[in-house]
Length: 199
Image (cartoon, rainbow, N blue to C red; front, side, top):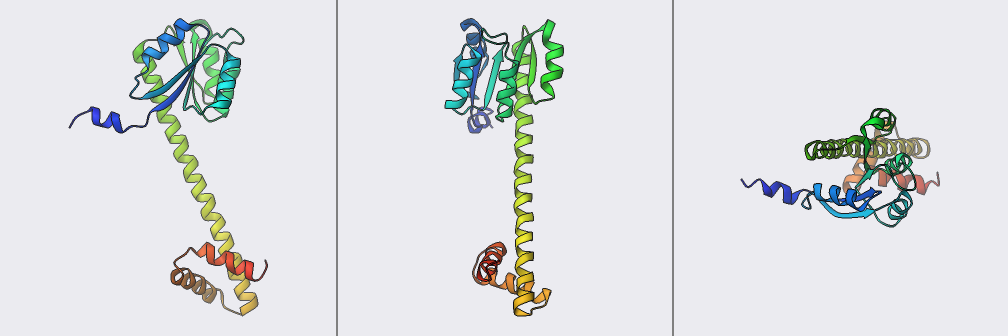
């Protein structure tokens, strides 16, 4: 099997590179494979980066500190709060303290000068972490929806018990049968019952 077939099917990630110099932005752009990262946009200040984040959606933000108008830490925290994968490149003398502070907020920090291998490993780690976080968020969303459905169905059963003098078991069967007959969800039937009795 051709190894490139897997790469072609993988979704590309849009990237915003924030660097104080064009040379730094160019170097980082060269490290990014266009098969995995596209489109890649570059800006040269924290202010420009914030404007770009308002205008366009990005999957990944790479900040090459320091920036001309700020260091880049606050920008990194802002990007992370937006749910974006965020990597900060920092000089070795500030790397350790910055890494401790930013990692607690979901930002990955890499010491400069950065090798191609370390850079790729950092991006892979960030992608894996974000995928896991998004999976957890999706599982939580489904769980919340399920809990809401259980709550609505329970309320509808109480209505059937109170107004139609059904037993709880009869009310349960009634909602299930209606959902099957009408090819809809139990929640939909329960909501109709609540609407009928204006609850």
